[in-house]
Length: 118
Image (cartoon, rainbow, N blue to C red):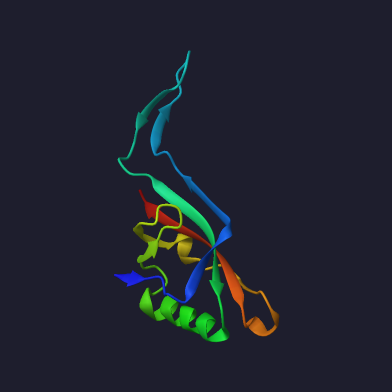
């Protein structure tokens, strides 16, 4: 399985995590709605900012995205909160806008949403 390239850093500021509880909810005519677990695993999302330290890294990442994981593939990432290697993919195959942190894209970032089952 592919891995997130080593030259890509995940920045701590701007990270957030969420999940869909994967329940089935049935509204009742009276009283509280009934709820039951719909799936054994939940879809988790990790919002993060990827940091690239050079233009070479930016170009290499795009090559990896198009050729390595072919836009939709899963890849292993060391989860920033748990420290565990986790199989993730880009939500909707979207790698966000490339934003320069300094002139000339010598340092750049991309805001992404990584999704995985947990």
